[in-house]
Length: 606
Image (cartoon, rainbow, N blue to C red; front, side, top):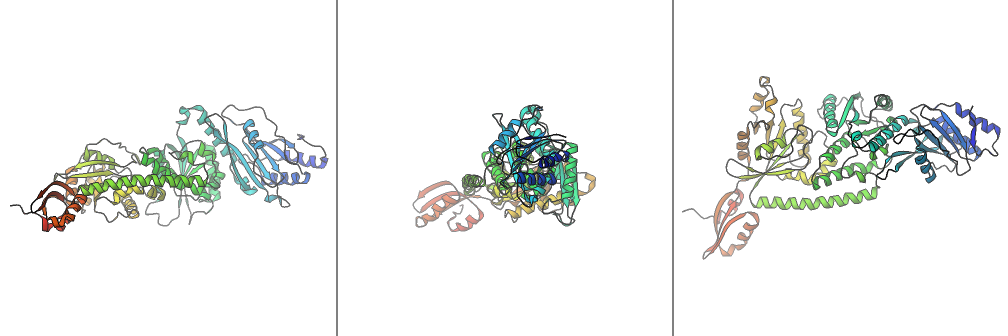
């Protein structure tokens, strides 16, 4: 049997024998410690009034037990390092007699120098030592100066500490270190992910679990992950602590370890506590549906406004998750759920995040004022505004390219374009219109995005006409239509004049009868934006629907009503103006409402 090292002066042989028996304890490989071992360490440490440290290998074997003084314990160095991107394979756990498990500067130095798998402390609390606290620190990554970054977790209860999947945590750390030190080639490898959903058996916004998981898989693919498996569980309602239940989480933790999975993606929004609990048990990063969509938006943002809006949404999502995060280390290592213009802000405190949110909102408000100015100018010039709306990947950008001979980015992928694009559109009646491509919608669009993109979505609410682009070839096109109307309702745009544009008819089987069935729908048109089919029908339908039509009109306004002439300059496009003996002769473009308002001044054509 191994001996006890360190400061043994004054320690009774019976206590040393008690400590030596600890060598017989084998810690399960997926646990950082057992509750029995932690309680025994706390009890003996309290009895002898000295700190105790133990060293445990990844196989769960205790290799050394050392005694220290009342306020410290020597932390010896171990040889046999595993290389620059590997940890030592040994974790150090020691006691703190003051009941506080927070780690000291000496603990952090030892963690870095020894490259331990973890440095942990037990805050001894008696006489019921099972109530002792537990904290631990991990090497979370490597910074730009090639220094180790450490993150502390806790304090936890001993039962919480036992539930952590320590083996998966260590594996995640070494993957992060490998990506950071191996360069772009390693970092380019896609993350392996599993998808998880809960089927409550009730209404799921009309989407089946299978359909929703299939869409989640497309989102994961878009974000750059490789989905290795999907899991669903039937429950009456989600578990408040673990969402899918602790037993199912432990089952998935075993699968994650066996298949070397990097990431677990849930098809619902998790509470901060649920995300933390699941991460601790599974030992890998956990991202919910909202976090995944935010990550995709972070990759797609190109304009300054888009980046600000994405960062705002990320910070609003992150703020309630700052307290008691699970694997905070994963936020530093890169990958899905960690990207975006605001990723350097994710580890700062609440106050600084709130300050940043305030600053971004002020910046977006300035952009909003510019947009409002542009809209006012368009209204003054009597230019019709048309907004493209629709489910993501329905073909909105392709349609804008076809109608306006543009070349904006358009690909067969979810959220291919994020930043709004505006182009001039020439209509068959020789009128000019403004056509705007907006961000795609999706079922359960995160409320943080709707809030952050409010200034952009106002383009939809303020448009004279909406073109609702629908991918008619998609099996769930009806449910996608419902999802779009839900978002339109949320931004107060559901009462706008809407043309339903059924796109991708070239992908529909002509013998299915679907196109014939839809053909008779009011205010709708069948097209293929990619092949240019049905464009004339669409343009004619746009002309028929536009309520805002300006007519060139000549007026004679008496000098007594010069206020009316001044108002025209603010609300319409004045083409000509001449001061005559009998009044001011004005030629301007007027809407139908304005013609009614100024009908007493309209000059009759001789």
